[in-house]
Length: 450
Ligand code: AMP
Ligand code: ZN
Image 1: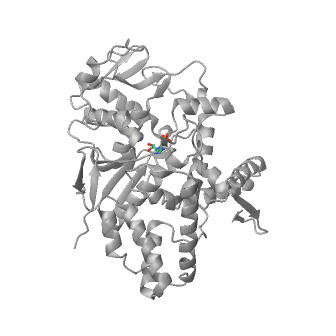
Image 2: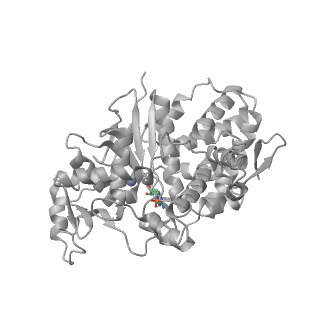
Image 3: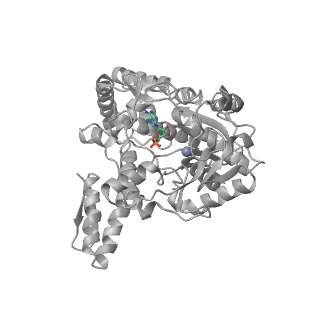
């Protein structure tokens, strides 16, 4: 029987049967990190949840393309680069490496496509052009704004009424906007901005707005209509609402994403973990304190994805104990091959019901208790198969991440042309990411986890 996924669609506010536009090729887009500093545990929750969804979709459909963008043009990036006195390219490259290494430690699969704003700036400018040509955007004082009144469906995702929104506004309309809710597609550079953060456009030197970056990257890489769009609940309004407005205004025959998924917040004492509130802990800090990435992954998967998850010491200790218990089973099962062992249906059915990960995890825990009592080989195989499916089957012996291998290759190339300064710089970055390298006599480079 064909497996059917039921998913809560934020666009309709209902649980729906997931029916992809093309069942032979499912396409999903998720808003990724803004690369101005290392990800905190809240950001990690979002990446782990969409990694789970990706794994579930891959289990059902023959081909899934998962695109997660990189926001590498943003005011916060400009400020952080200025503080460090480096270019935004250098800063975002550094943070991107750290991000990739954290994601690897959390046992996330790599998305199929990771497009970045910097790599797509010309196409972003073209899309803004199109919106101006279609009279959905206007130029004012070096800015380009999207006119929300020009798009009749504005508010359909977040359930807001644009007329009410505009009537309710008593404050002076800022800058040169026609309406308070109009949002920026292009803004002029500040004089103090570093040259690396200034881009040429027909409207002057500046940079694109954040919302248009996602509209361009999702439609460019997945098509004007695609299946699923995800991100944290904080992005529903205005970011996702604005993405829909821009994309559907630019391509009137398209509906943009068919399903919208929003993950709940990771909280601390009930408050959203965020950089601005200062109540955050980075994944890197936790790893440096000796917490295993798999242990963090377990924490992030134990609560239903739409519910808040409060992070505290007790949760961490519980997760440590469970991982230790699971590792004992996985150690015993290390010579058992489960590549062709089916994923237990009873377990997968729980995930098919709007990713009921809380119950799916309870199923795994019960299985571990049964194994302790009866020690049946079939149950051990079930356990290992599920653990591998969920991403913590690998008993700590993670392979070297691809980004580290790519950096090792860069060192080799730099040494080949005797650019030892560059080789040393890259080596320092590798060390910073928790790896060491050895130069072998034959000129090869070995990467070792510290
Ligand atoms: P940012 O790097 O701030 O653009 O965020 C990257 C992703 O993490 C977005 O999808 C956010 O919605 C998500 N996110 C940020 N903070 C939290 C949090 N405390 N809990 C869950 N998701 C979050
Ligand atoms: Zn986005």
